[in-house]
Image (cartoon, rainbow, N blue to C red):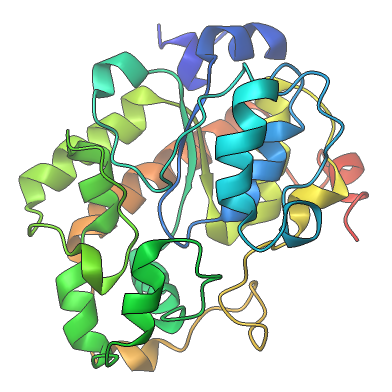
Length: 281
């Protein structure tokens, strides 16, 4: 029988029991996979009880809303999740977090394109932001070759330093053995796996698994890469010029497998999610 925390047990049990088994949740936040997921987390019953805030964004907490939330709001109001700071940390002690991990994964080539196009567009909340803006932006393929395997890196490394996803934070090259271990952790260690490309279905699945009601804030893009690009539209892959992140593809394939399994297991569909989707703006 599969572990109840993974959401793949034959007898699903109650959403509140699944949440209790997984708390405090540890948000695995890979760069450009969806900062907006924070609003699904804070609105989940039991995560931030008593918190009047329903949306973490630049309007409610200022341009550095992520830093403000994790350092000032989360420690006081959110016992149901770990307040991970700096963001985008590597897992560190995986054994201690196994079964409590939640997060979204993204097509690796689209993720790298999004990272590349976000160069210098951040709100400048960290010391490295000014340095990055003063650097010459390299050609995409050069950048991608240095940054490939980022999801694998975050999933396997013991060093919990922030992995900002910038050229200032180049990690050691990842191997297929690293990717294999990372994919195992996705399949065995995550209480919830969503996909950035399937945002709406991921939000519905999250609530099907852990309870609570969908809110409009959970469908908003609170940190777009560019105001000129719709988050629902993929980047033009001709920019890749044949490049492919084959390391992170192993991880993404594992995430896709888990996601599809749970979509079927929890009967998540356009029809069954109708009430959830009705709150979208």
